[in-house]
Length: 212
Image (cartoon, rainbow, N blue to C red; front, side):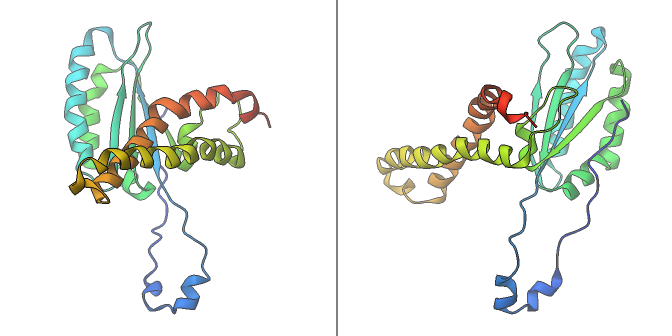
């Protein structure tokens, strides 16, 4: 499969907003939150696994130095010729393009190519699409279904988790009602969404979710 990075989009900064009147800004629609997750698969030569693992340790700190970087997660293969899967997140397509088109990444790819059995495979997902992975040949879930499933998971989390964190922070007075308390709540919600609830929820409702 040909390696392709995220598609470059136009810069959405609008200098005219600096001088726009309050009523004009209020009439505008809210900007859509943008994010991109790149899912990269590498099939490693059997005798090159140690060298590839060492390469992974080098590339992650380099990616972290690029603006908009939001984390790297490596899924090691369980066996049977399965590929390594690397997910890398950025806060915008423009920032992701900066990384994928960078000279630093190209140099790192030159180092890793001799360790691979073929070219790397890259798939990018934006926004809610990150959570929804149809099987090959199946169409992506409709947007309103993605919204409803995500809302069904995140709504109770945003009700329960902050309340529990608040109880804990009350025992530590200097943490109560501070950024640390809110950060802890957000981190727990995101972790539960990513690693526990969304994977299970999408499997549970798959029959309805991907029905066109």
